[in-house]
View 1 (cartoon, helix red, strand yellow):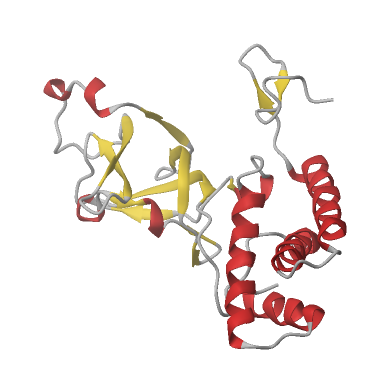
View 2 (cartoon, one colour; view 1 turned 180 degrees about the vertical axis):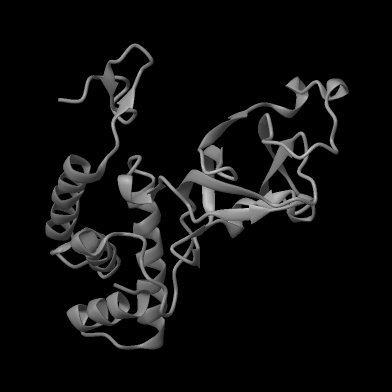
Length: 226
């Protein structure tokens, strides 16, 4: 579902088509998206394999925002893995902190699979990727695994919440709307939102571990997930 469709749906439910209310509903939709997406680590936010990207030295550093999936830009929030697939194999490149690099022993002119990658930020604060050794003029091909960046939606933007769980977002917006209007149905909408959230957690939440194999829930102070 896209943003405008959900906006129109909520407008019909509250029977209010004024510009002021439309603006409020739009804000509540984006608040709901953020509330849901920060509630857990969701499988629908994970890109296991990006589109194959061909890069040379002049393409670097590579912004997180230009990564693509299925021919469309799908910006990354966190990059988890990078693989060099130039030679038809998948070679994982190790992530390293910039200050841990020893740059004295490597020839930057040799075309080869980079040993490491690290993250830094440009002058605007945007996240970007750099390789070590740096790429040359010979194209190398890469795929990326990452978590999607959740951006504010508007207009015809497709909502990042899967269609089968749009009702959870809708219930969130109804709760905010009813609460704003001092409508007695606010509690009912909130209860429906929380019930839907529990369904999402059961179906879509990725499992977290404490490092020893024990499953944990970061929202319940380390208590085992039931």
